[in-house]
Length: 257
Ligand SMILES: [Zn+2]
Image (cartoon, protein in one colour):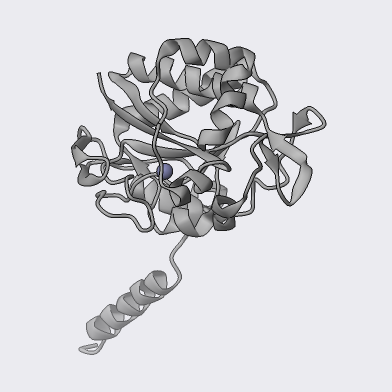
């Protein structure tokens, strides 16, 4: 009889251990979606609620309480998984609103078109090799929209990091696939909407970097003519390397109004 209580306690303990070893799934667990690594990365970094602060300048600054850009949405996608997982897609909260609201407007104006987003800033900003700017959450690289036979071309959208090294001729044709060219009309429309939504979010475009030789083509399009009248500043002087790099994408710096 004197062993009964210890024996009962032992059995209870054993039962508890078994329960711990094989936990009963929560009722909702079976229905919860299996998150991919990218989604987990996004959700882990998507908890910031404090106001964002861009410190210093785009080429000498940092970012506080930045926001991660979603990897993809109904009509946009981030260009490179490794870049995303290495935390190179953070922006000031107002820049995020600007980017996403612009995509929503583009979805209505250009249904069926997919847009590519490229590197932004690191979570806390600062130097982000090899970019000179992109330091305080106010710089964004947008993939230049492409077309083939007058239709959207997505053949190079998933090229990843090498997308930055695509080269175009002075008329905007891809040098390795001359049937593919820059869709200047869509690009101009995108920039006009970025400026509009930026202003609704307390920002404006301070600078666009796009290859010198391609600006004529951009401004010759219908939306391009309107773009020219807005006076949005396009970089006038670029080193040969920086100039050559900005054709597969255009770079946009924002600043507070
Ligand atoms: Zn850039």
